[in-house]
Amino acid sequence: GDSVTQMEGPVTLSEEAFLTINCTYTATGYPSLFWYVQYPGEGLQLLLKATKADDKGSNKGFEATYRKETTSFHLEKGSVQVSDSAVYFCALSDRGSGGYQKVTFGTGTKLQVIP
Amino acid sequence: EPEVTQTPSHQVTQMGQEVILRCVPISNHLYFYWYRQILGQKVEFLVSFYNNEISEKSEIFDDQFSVERPDGSNFTLKIRSTKLEDSAMYFCASNPRQTYNEQFFGPGTRLTVL
Image (cartoon, rainbow over all chains, first blue to last red; front, side, top):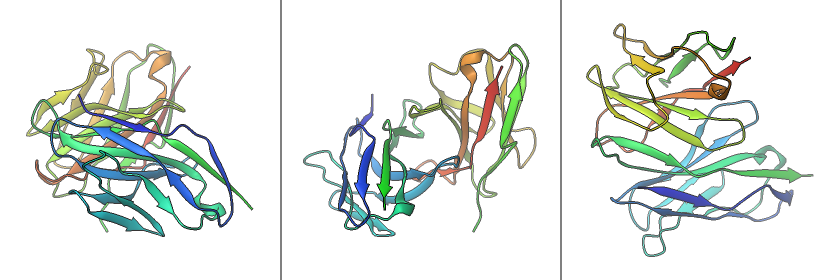
């Protein structure tokens, strides 16, 4: 079945540091890839997405490139802020066994940014 | 911008009681989903639903769980006899068609079973 592996957290960075959160996947089909963010006590928010190889998703200074050859979708941001502190989930959407889209999530990486 | 809504935001119940979690998907969406996130763990797929039928369900979705679209707007998840391990955040999601790759998630309902 499909799976998503992302780096273990927590990740603690100083404000304005460079962020990378690694994500790799395995999928039976040709999935779409996503990063979701979950702020403390809140639900899931879509951060960015990419639907085909070499696509770059970007939003709020975050970006990730769909790398089919390495089955990766690493999240990066050049300069993090305290307000970026949250849990980040890498995810893929692919056809499930019933033929319908199903989202598979990674375990999440907690990011803490300190002033 | 249309969004998925869920009620209640937090539900506390006693073990063995039935609970119904409610979701209102985006109005023109046809495919509906429930996911679960146990505290500190990853989000897990429970079930997908289309045309008043379950299209796929995970191993987690056993006989204690059921889903229903009782009217044209609501989509519900029922847990018949709650267990302590059902304590989790439950997310509803929807999308407009089978081939649409993005699912739109609601804010979640936190279920606490005592």
